[in-house]
Structures are given as structure tokens and as C-alpha cells.
Image: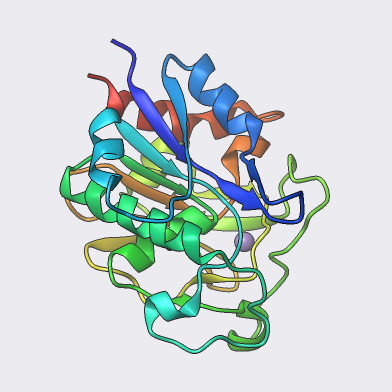
Length: 236
Ligand code: MN
């Protein structure tokens, strides 16, 4: 049986009364690697979250707007301008339920931050104003190519997945993980110290990547690896 993988989505509220968006590369990767993708909506209530999780064998939290600072106990900096409370509420509820049900969980960019906040951690709301000596992390052009380097920690799952200690990755974020949530470890950092990958200390699959492997995978096969590894953990 192919595993069923839920993928979270965003709403573009500049189009009519709101149009759902998700990167098609991500859907294609899941389908082409032997699984069944399902796009998860953002909901007004969290009453039926457990029903969604029951349908799934794994879940991917995708990229998008900033997480509202109220979800990690802070007032917003002026640099935090694009938020979606409906999406935040839905994703944090999905995360909590998926974590309790021990579903394999992957987070990409914003999704890595959702994992961290879901486990009680917090974020830099804006690395450029909060982290001294930070280099560029926000490059919208050529997202299919690498932009900055990351160092991968030894003896981590991330190192096992990529089989490398250094990696050139793309980068499209101005927020990042600050203090780690429960049972998480740092698996990779950029050279200026920004956390670029986290994983679980427990015997379960949780992987958060601050970069976008789904876009790099268009040109570079090695970026398919986190997905194929994740899907193996999701097999029934
Ligand atoms: Mn980065």
C-alpha cells in the first residue's frame, strides 16, 4: 500500500476572496516517489484535525509566511508583516496531533519553524535585526541553485541522509529557529550560526529543513534524498 502524505498549504488572499497555493514540485516529488499526496486546507476550527491525521501516514509542513509571534509568546517586530493566523492555528493543531500519533513529520522552511514552535521552542522574528553578523538568507532568484553553505553535524540523521558534512543550499527566509523545542537537536547551521536543520532526539522521524530541497531537486538529485528517506519511514 502506498503511504498517504498530507501537505499543508497557504492561502493567497490577494486573489479574489483567497486562493489556495502549494508548490507543485513538492506534490510531484511525493507522487513520483511512490506515495499519495493530499493537500491539507487551513480551517476555521480545529475540531476535525484528528480525522485528517487518521487519514495520513506522514505529513509535510510546507513553506510560506511568518509564524505569528503570539504563538511563541512575543510581541511582533515591525519586520513581521505577512502572517496567517488561520494557517498557524491549523498547522500547530496538525503538528500536535501528528506528534501524539507518532506520524513521520517533515518541515520545510516555515515548516521547520512550525515543528520548533509546536514543541515549545521560539524563533528569531527577523534574523537581520536580531542576529549580529548574519549573512544573506533571502534570495528569491535562482531558488533551484545553492546560495549559502551549511555545515551538517556529525552522527545526525541529516548527515546520514545527505552523506555530506557541507552542503550548498538555497535560502528564502528572514526568520529562523532560536531556542530549540523539546526533544530537538540542531543538525545543521549556516556559517553565521543560523539553524538550518533540526531533527528529533527520540526514536521517530522528525526533520525540519530551513532550505527548500524540493526546488534544488530539479537540478540536483541529492536533494531528493530527504524525501525518499522520509517516505520510507511512512510506508505501511
Ligand atoms: Mn538560510
